[in-house]
Length: 380
Image 1: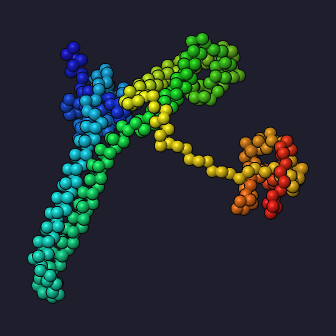
Image 2 (image 1 turned 30 degrees about the horizontal axis):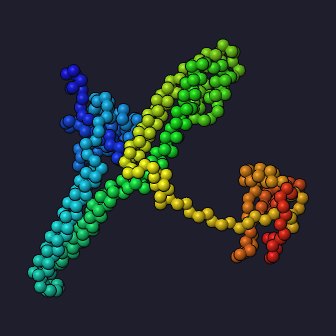
Image 3 (image 1 turned 90 degrees about the vertical axis):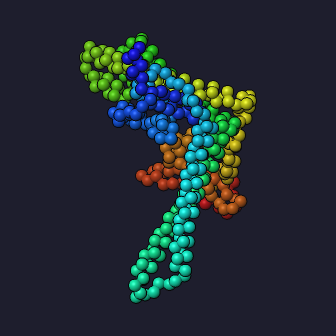
């Protein structure tokens, strides 16, 4: 027990309000001790005396390992409290800047009163002293202006800190945050399914041919190097293929196990945050309504109609809808706008070989679609 107590260097907390981890140490730590936190992406907050970072599984592991703890604690401060502390600190910075500006103005006024409007007397023994005083007054004036700018900056930061905290807790913002978390949870679930499928394959065993096909499907479930290892023994004996397949299966099992655990932690974290954010809503039944609040889609731009005009189309550019779709997928076909003003319309164009070895661009007529008459003003 004494060894466990001695090994515990601090505390790791988590706050779902801002999704951040914070590491508090009981005493000053060496650079070597803090290096894992720096490598994991933690940053130092001197005002709170803590290292902080957004939650990730690797950061949780790094923080727990450095502090010697085995679980996360609840963050004692709230988002509103931290915003109020930040605003108070920024207001203090603004007050200091205002005080500096006032002091520099008074100093310039005092020096100006001493001069009493006296111009520089060229050639007099006081000329150099007079010019030096004017330079100091001008430099002091510039620093006073800069202090005023700093005061305005910190005042805006103080106002923005409280406004930001209130904004994050509005129901519409919270609902959109839930919407994003739900999308993340679905993505994590898809990743988890891929690696669970790999674990199932490893448990059942697979032949060299089946394993090579599985590793070559390109869905991200297996590293690319596994397929290369299997392909390297394509012409080898069956015994060699079985040996390589067994080695790849073992590596795949380790990879899938670690990845499944990784994405399971992400999925659990996302679902936990969804539950927390939903519980903060006054009326969870209005969640769908709130998700769409302020996110109305922009009206689609009305495009001119597509006309299927036969006039001026030669045989090479007469084709079916399926042929045009294949050309368009290959980026050899497109829709172009013709006409002007209210008479605008769209017409299909494609690059097709005309039998002379070239593939010029021409208008297309679809033989399986109704034909339209050419509008006034021609077909170009």
